[in-house]
Image (cartoon, rainbow, N blue to C red; front, side):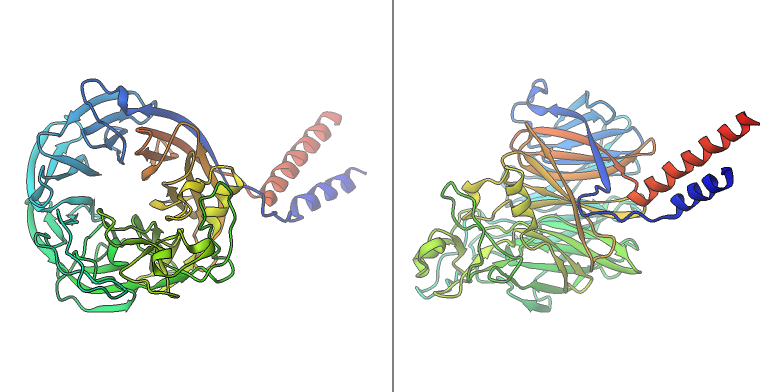
Length: 499
């Protein structure tokens, strides 16, 4: 009898348990939220971009008026650094105890600066002049270079040429050239400024008739530190930057997404009812946040396809002005790309994965919009614009799985979608973090502290920073083996006791 029980217990441990689609593979627990409006004597401080400092276990949060330095363990404020005397802070990046702050000049068409700080003493250690409107910056993996995306937005855009559609706009009178400043961290000098004028183009649907130059938005670098990809959001393109020559090798047009295809449904009506359908309209991807990772020895780039119009909305029109009727009449479209019967919206209402050459490997279709609707947080008032507006991206490896976190800017509560992108050709939606009290996640940061994984979410509209701890959930077959193992242990203990 004892041998039979033992054999049965061993057999139970070896029987695989099939996981269902509802089985979670990741759990998350809210650790804390900090509200930046409580920061003393700042006025206007919010939360846009976060960076983790492993040397001090602190989070540096950039938000208009300066930096709030928070204890990453409990969210308490350690210090506020007021940066308003330099200009407007747009981003922060940290490597090896050095914090780099991207500062836009008071007149945004003037040259900006990068201000450096020691993360331990929190003292300013110097600055470097870069291009106009430095919007984002990132270190190469080894920290030898700092790459700065100089967006170079004009004060006044170019005026319309003629009356034909799609519309065309001439060049702006004062439009600083978009570029990437490449700072040599050994000397803290600009080693090169990579420009985009005259760079060869490939792909499709590159927008060059918008009354502005290419405007670098976001940068990601491969693991080897040899290539960077630079999002040119308004142009619906990405620039490929060769870091051996410190110059752009090409600009890749990202094409268009067809919202009439199955799995790409949208809700174009902000009429109080959320209803998804297939429509004869396309969306230009126009990514904001991007992030690179390695899979199978190749680099892939994750892109949050937010979409964007000019700051003055001069390139935006209601589809009705181009002959659209019914559900599409109020849809806001790109008048620089659209014509009657051939409409293009800003953004793809999704995130996508592309290979190193910019070829589309995966797109999340309508998952983000529909998941938000299923959870009761879809903002129907944004339906005619860009849906949930995926904006920020963060990547993290947890229990051997490559996870992608996608921040949704336009939902009724703060929302971050989680996907398993380990295999870029077989992506799985896992879950969505929804945080009451948070609104409009702008920047996402993942990090590991004391052996635990975390996600920091900077929420621009609510002016809050929220941190979640992350953990892998054992798959069902693992549970079965654990339970069977416990049974075997209990069986052996009883057998010893009986002896």
